[in-house]
Amino acid sequence: MLRLTCPHCGVTAEETELHPGGEAHLVRAGPGASDEAFEAWLFARRNPMGVHFERWRHVHGCGKWFIAARHTVTLEVFGTYPAQTKAPPAELIARIRDKVPDWEGWPAGGALRGADGEGTEGGKA
Amino acid sequence: MKGYSAWSLIREGLRHHLGWGRAWGSPEPRRRYEVVIVGAGGHGLATAYYLARNHGITDIAVLEKGWLGGGNTGRNTTIIRSNYLHDPSAAIYEKARQLYEDLSQELDFNIMFSPRGVMMLAQTEHEKRVWQRVAHANVLQGIDTRFIGPEEVKRRVPIINIDGPRYPVLGALWQPRGGTARHDAVAWGYARALDRMGVHIIENCEVTGIRTEGGKVVGVDTGKGPIDCGKLALVVAGHSSRLAEMAGFRLPMESVTLQAFVSEPVKPMLDVVVMANTVHGYISQSDKGELVIGGGTDGYVNYTQRGAFHHVEETVTALVETFPVIGRMRLMRQWGGIVDVTGDRSPILSKTPVENLYVNCGWGTGGFKAIPGSGWAMAELVATGEPGALAEPFALSRFREGRFIDESVAAGVAH
Ligand SMILES: Cc1cc2nc3c(=O)[nH]c(=O)nc-3n(C[C@H](O)[C@H](O)[C@H](O)COP(=O)(O)OP(=O)(O)OC[C@H]3O[C@@H](n4cnc5c(N)ncnc54)[C@H](O)[C@@H]3O)c2cc1C
Ligand SMILES: [Zn+2]
Image (cartoon, rainbow over all chains, first blue to last red; front, top):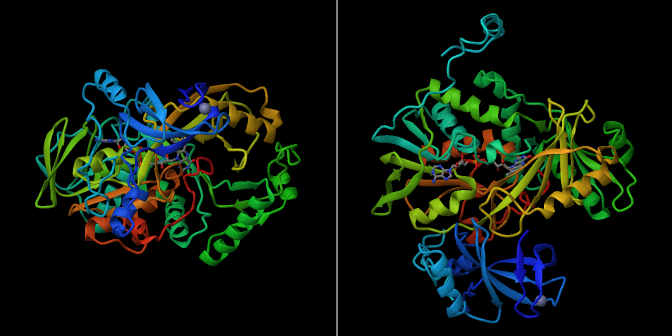
């Protein structure tokens, strides 16, 4: 069972006390953005086999949103931090780089296109 | 390679079964194929099969990183039904269900299709109305389903507890020609038929890169060296985002783990498939007597093929409440598969930003039932370069245009 520490109230909770909220640090397209950019923000996902930054909500606790950095194959949790940030803390990035030498780093995959072929800023803060 | 028949069974029975040949070979890859398909799950194999059968293309390699059928095709709970709400889904799932009806004869391989009937319980007022609506939609789509009351549920499934304390059974959506099939046999049957048509199935051959020139796909890099191709089809379920990344685009999809379990074998006690979506559990009894039980999906990206432990408890709670008689049975095995869940919970059969590169993915928690229909539609797309009527609604462009096919097919139960 996945256990995450809520950075707001400090409680270490099992996943049943939390609710997952999908990929973190997606930046909303617009106003005036193209349909392609809006589609990419809504639907295109990195879905990595490796380090993933994702939103969680401490639903059965303090109720607040936070972000967890987690490995999607080993399930190792590298750390959590409040959701009110645009990028992961530098100290956490350094820690992940130490543990996962072949990690592509932050921000990740900025050059990828959305499914439509248009350039997107997917994954960037 | 010999055909299978009652006579060959008798003959081999008398010879201690020493004379059965291998059902498919293990060829060395050629340098180039007209079509390369990545992924030898049911959908990849069926795509190859209908390319050969319907479009006369046999210069095909199906590349598989592990063993064929070792992905979700060999891990699912084998429920087959076509009682979907929206027309595009009903069309492709019903096409598949109809092809399943005589697939054993077609492939000369017993896939054990068992149209024993699928029952989807209504355990809240809301669910009851939803199933009634689906039953009405199915009438218009020409799919044989109907809404049945709690008495008929009890008559068809005597072990069910229809007046449970939390969620009494208020009725069910009943599809009499839904059922199950043997999942491995579907993969094996297609593989054997492909081998006989000269199509190469290359196992232990992982695709590690996709080569393009001027926006066109020209080949793949594999563990067995580079292979060139005219056209490329990615049919890799939970690994689709990885392959798309190799080709330089991103998909509207996340990969999560879905779990299943089987119990110890017992005497026949359940001769239909029962799905209880409100309490999250579905159940059928295999020919060996085991109860085959499907559970929940994780809500976060997970590539482990294990799944979260608490789903075991949730699923078992739900089923013991619905079928109190199974309360003392033991579960023998648990496993997970990496399912590919899209933004609208419907599959993708589509062209991509790369020319001559096609994807078939996003079947999520419910694609076993679709294998023949999906292969049929995908073969048409790959052969002609344009989607036919079955595939057209499932194009990637629907996410930009807002033409969602919102079935919740991958809701984590219901398959
Ligand atoms: C527990 C569980 C229960 C389910 N229950 C049902 C059910 O009752 N009814 C139903 O209809 N559906 C069900 N499903 C869903 C169904 O199993 C899938 O939708 C379906 O099997 C997908 O088939 P596929 O051929 O697309 O994928 P897979 O069978 O997963 O095949 C994809 C193949 O691609 C290969 N591959 C991946 N990456 C590479 C690479 N780089 N190079 C080469 N090969 C690669 C994989 O090894 C794999 O063999 C269930 C799924 C699970 C996990
Ligand atoms: Zn908290």
